[in-house]
Length: 514
Length: 121
Image 1 (tube, rainbow over the protein chains, first blue to last red):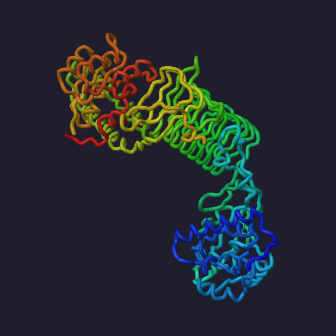
Image 2: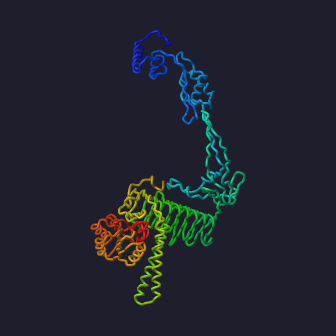
Image 3: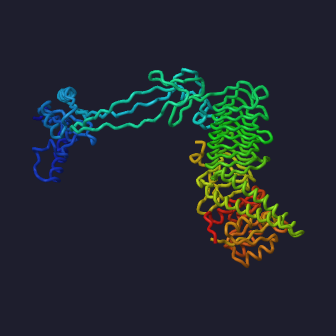
């Protein structure tokens, strides 16, 4: 029943007239007299209710509850509509049939429901989207696993990221441990538990896969802890946690130490003097400058200073190389190469990519990087130009060069023999000529056999974030581009359809640095 | 498939070795050291590939490329040079040469420009 008002002013009359008019219009639009169903009719909106309130008329509405089961059936939410006027209060018992109708059989939060019902009835405020039933999520089955110590993983050295825009820690892993240091912990298996939806459906537990790390060499278990069995370098690969024995030479490598040859990792605290060689199966870490005569490393090379290869300096690493600079040196690398400042008059070949720091400049020499080059500057206004080749496997190319050079030597010999034959007849000369020709053919056949494995990467990119000067040569696969004018902020890619090199604005998203 | 190739170089040893390699690959090779003779041959014959020395006494490879392609636009010219940074290389490429190889020659690029899977004739 609407409440009585002592007086009806003009404002009230106008608003009521408008409302009645709106209702008439709405009813005529849907047809029929729906006066008994106005509570549920969409035309009887909150606006209309407000208008009624403004008019001092409060209709009677029963309290009610709407339920909604989530798509995954893991929860059921409710909206409580409070009673209005003299409408019927919501009762907890009203909710049983609603839950039944929705198929909700478990996880019902009766205590919360009682509180919502009470609040809706007393506060007369709508309570929306509250969870009234919740399923039980399954607990995944997790096998036992060896988890490396986070502190060791985080303590790998390297330059700061902002100095080089490269996370050197990603490939410069030189963490030393003492005997007994904890390397990893054995996390026990967790049994999987099924879950249940609010509609009573069982959900089978998921079987989680974990890394299959195992304990490697120079480690032992102490209860659930894997510890170092000797001092050395902590290493984690995809399959195992282990410690490699480390040779630490804290002085310079020179006449006091002699050449270094070691089956594990080597740490050099001082400088490596010219003419002294280092050979190791593991990785090499050098705190200062590496004056390289001959360095052959089975793993990674990390040099805080630079590599200086006076005369015929040669450095090879099967893993990655991370250095400040490279000067006058031949460097061959199986993985990626990171150089902070410059590569000067050097021959650097890698099966990975070359990324240089913010001031990274290449002057002279030649670079072969199968997966591309990211550099700040190539050449200088007065410096000697460089040759940058991408997309090819330098090891195959070097074999082909060896074949070519030997074919050339044999061809020269063949010419000499032919001149001799013209001067005198000697069956031995003819036999020699045949042997040389046979060998040239054998070399050519070998070239044909291996040329297919050159393994070109046509997507390799040479990115120059500042300048490239005239005379520098860019090659991607078989395509060549000779820089004829100074250019800035450019990148070179292979136009596969035309077989030419395309020069376009520098795109940092395609850089090996990012 | 056998291809017909013209090699132009004033270094007879380079001519000889390239010829040996290409003939071992199953191709037919004509080698000349005179660029004027090369122009005539390139115009008169149909070669699948013409390999030009960039620096020759009378006429450079870029000019030679221009003269050949102006009379035989479909010819495929490959520049051979000891100085890849030579500005003439890019000039020749701009004038229509299909690529550059380093002297005395680059086996992989020769295979590439002739098609990798060579069948004997």
